[in-house]
Image 1 (cartoon, rainbow, N blue to C red):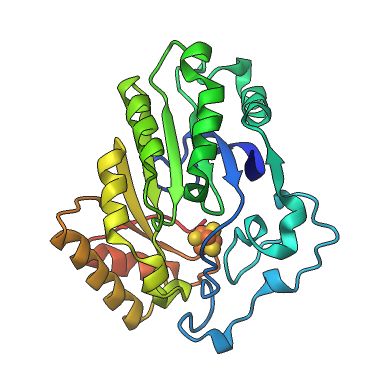
Image 2 (cartoon, rainbow, N blue to C red):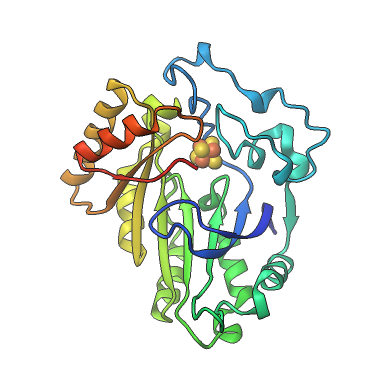
Length: 277
Ligand code: SF4
């Protein structure tokens, strides 16, 4: 069984492949909380305001009813215990059937545009359910549905969980069949998320994802403070010292009002920039 909170047809909003049409599976559960996002001082929990802890849950029947919270994790609906009624524990066949039903003509390839749709695992933290992702993709059986490969699988992850050997082998087999595997890695920094590095910063995991996927990128949510930019510089230096070559994007939190400042700072420091979501 796999724990999810949603399956949707959408255009991808983050990472190297922003704008690509996709079916997105939102996996339930996360090992972080990121309560510092959007706070005036992300490194001081005493100052936090957290709407997800107080919002009236009675009218929230799906994650699409979740209000636009300006502080804390925007995906708290997929892991906070107050929203456990939104979690569906389905078998992989059920999930795969719903995925195929969302695709025009039940095909990853679109005859009109000539484009492929991607399959995206997001969350929560999808890497907590690696066996579940194998089961879903096995059930989808890309080759059977779509001899016109390649297509691409994307995994949006906080970059904290090592690859299980079984999942690593499975991804290798996918790649051998011509399916692209893209890791959209979004590690959390203390001075923007409030998560301490011992729980949120694992460069060895980032390196493993970069080596296992056919492509990868790192996206960091920014907080425009001296301490944040210094932490980012130190972490990026660590990646470089480990020989990790990866595109690094900076993006403002979706509640940020100083987007232009962050964009300018990112440009001057040589980081890529993604619009806030
Ligand atoms: S890692 Fe992502 S889903 Fe998990 S708490 Fe942080 S922002 Fe939310």
